[in-house]
Length: 364
Image 1 (spheres, helix red, strand yellow):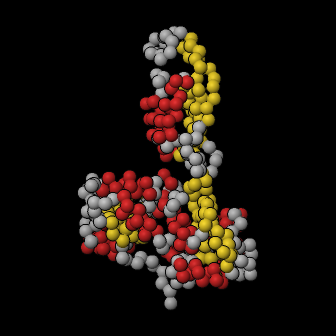
Image 2: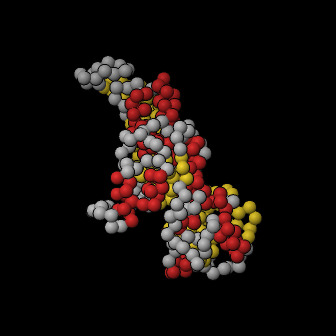
Image 3: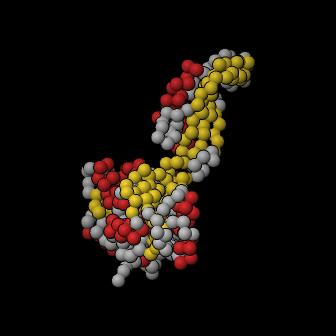
């Protein structure tokens, strides 16, 4: 298996189209044409992790955080990023990052966070916007079912817990072909009026090329009439953060004690206690200060995230318990999920869990 043959498996777990625009995901370093010898899964692809990959004969490192985030103007080994990149290149090791592609996935970072805390009835906290498009096309009734089914198979027509979703209406189409035309119905230069079915389906924007290729292959007309629209609808199953409920309400101190134990946090910084029970909990792995207001609007009793600054604790506005449990800690079980996913999909060589603790924050 070549390294590039592993990418579809990684994309099935964390589609690159789900990543935020600012992010740097996918293959960051290495030759995708090389034969894969093994996969090392880590949180951060530091130099020590590259050493571990060399020792364990793994030439693909799958990391959560991208070691290359912004552009480098030189690579001289003077920073921890440059040293890791140089060692990876020198030893023919590829580095692939998933980051916000997995953050936004409904089974990704925040679902893992919720599961660790035993939260039920979970849903996305900040649904992804500007991600849904609509295809409208027209065909004769005899061709409509074939077109619909092909579009469904290509990924169109999924809405929340439902698939094969479409809207169909009857109408009359007209056309007249020129001397270069080869009409399916009627003759050249003939004005044709035909009964047609208007088919409307939604799809995720990264599927557009596949959807259109399928449409052109399945449609019987020489020239296919279609329209594509950007929709304002939020994608209810993709997005940042998650909110769920504890099976049984807990007092604030007991709740934070449980969080500290479950997430193995070295310490928790939190806003003042409000003396009210905690049941509805919002989470956002990593730096999540931007989602405080979203958690309040969602009616959360508590919001767990990381990297909060001093003044951001005021933003709790005495409406919820705001807690910073640590960046690494909030994403602690992510690489476990990646390893488990890959081991189920790839059976012919080793998927190894990195033993390096790359958390840069230490506690007394």
